[in-house]
Length: 99
Image 1 (cartoon, rainbow, N blue to C red):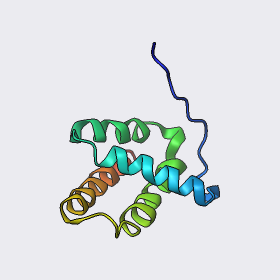
Image 2: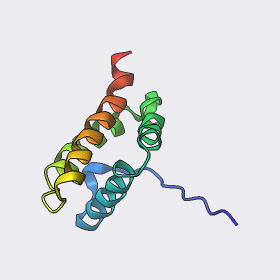
Image 3: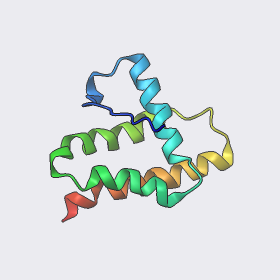
Image 4: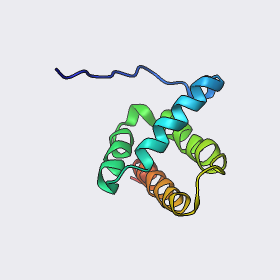
């Protein structure tokens, strides 16, 4: 049996402490997954929608502020991978704005 998870609208600017922690964990899981292609496809889905422009901008800010800057507990190799992956995700998210 397959279960689908449907996340409704996420207002990044209105997240409480627990919401930020959940969103950060979700993004870390996506960013540090084994397949770079899988990670990029997740962000590309958001990047292709014109209706999600504000969400993309908020997500880019969230990645830099809450994922990169608040990741002092992540060790060397994973931190290097995380830095690279955030840059790739940021590029994917901003691709639509360059068109």
